[in-house]
Length: 427
Ligand SMILES: CC(=O)N[C@H]1[C@@H](OP(=O)(O)OP(=O)(O)OC[C@H]2O[C@@H](n3ccc(=O)[nH]c3=O)[C@H](O)[C@@H]2O)O[C@H](CO)[C@@H](O)[C@@H]1O
Ligand SMILES: C=C(OP(=O)(O)O)C(=O)O
Image 1 (cartoon, rainbow, N blue to C red):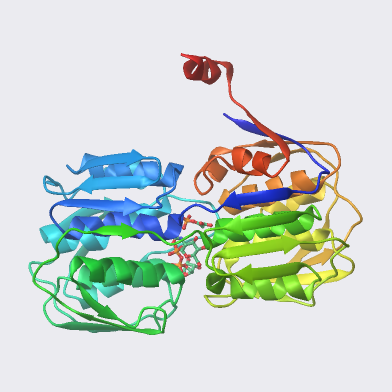
Image 2 (tube, rainbow, N blue to C red):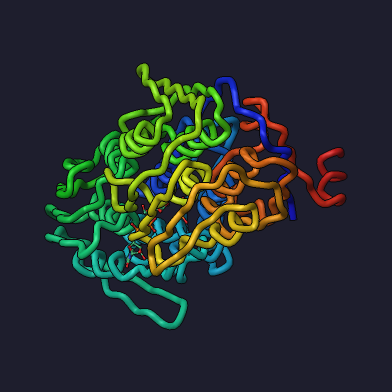
């Protein structure tokens, strides 16, 4: 298992380019199955989750290629509506295959998806949405079989604006007969990106970005070329790292409109953030102060995917801050690790009370999930001394070589691979 080793205490400085969004690229890759032919996608990051999605597409008969940030998927020969359990279990986003495969083949056999251990992460809203479109669902313990000779448009109200359920329903409804309306839909930028991609294929969807999405079913879709949006969570991670190390960092290829809640919080604690078109500049010369309360909620509120990272900044701020997590019940696992590094955080139900300390100290810690891992990297960069982070594979799900990106900003950070892997690379 790889480890990250960090010698902290240096302010980050310099410019980096932000890669494409994992959470946009994954549903878009799954949606490519809705058409027959060759799709070319730009700005697709080289991440573990993307690799798994491409492996699944290959397993069901597609041809795929990922060179630099360009992915080509040829879906012409896709011939299976079954996703093997071993692949399903590798990530949560395998669930995105359900809608497109059902729409393409009239049936799909999948399993409960895997993913980060951040909460229960049910899929009831996905299933209810597909049933509303006319699918019959047979569920045993882990296996889910879904069938529908013809999907038919319907009015679907989501009890919670689930990102994944909104996307799965959109993908299933594109080729359905008639019109589908999703109310209380999720409004995340990645949903708008999926709408834009599907419309480029010839779909007729509008409303993404609001809480009501309308999908007028079409007969068929034709392949296209498309560019994925920048990753707002990766951008946010680097912005917070710049502030936590009292650095001076410029991010390029970002969309600041997707980061309004974070920019508001950062400015509120005294961090300088300026925006110029697709460039964001972050600098922090003095100790930030505490924030009264941050609550994670669906977009456009503060994202749960930046909760653990901002907690590192609050741990180093002057005063006590409160962080309430309302999306995932198991997303405070980084707290024990941060405490090991000297943070002063108390958890009460879904709220964390963070008393700022003057400094964090390097320690051996474990990434328990993707964003918890990213938070530990930030903590390690800001801390005095050496930090070793285990279970780096979690971080690799969402950041393309995080150590290289931070090295470019002057950090001392490197990856230690087991000897056998180092030899593999040498050959
Ligand atoms: C690949 C991707 O885009 N992942 C993002 C997506 O995950 P994901 O799509 O899984 O997140 P959801 O919005 O669906 O989940 C939010 C909440 O709804 C619950 N729920 C969800 C579906 C369902 O059928 N039943 C149900 O109860 C979940 O358990 C969770 O408590 O949005 C999350 C919330 O912004 C982000 O943290 C993830 O990074
Ligand atoms: C929770 C996340 O991703 P996923 O939904 O793919 O597990 C994340 O990106 O922080």
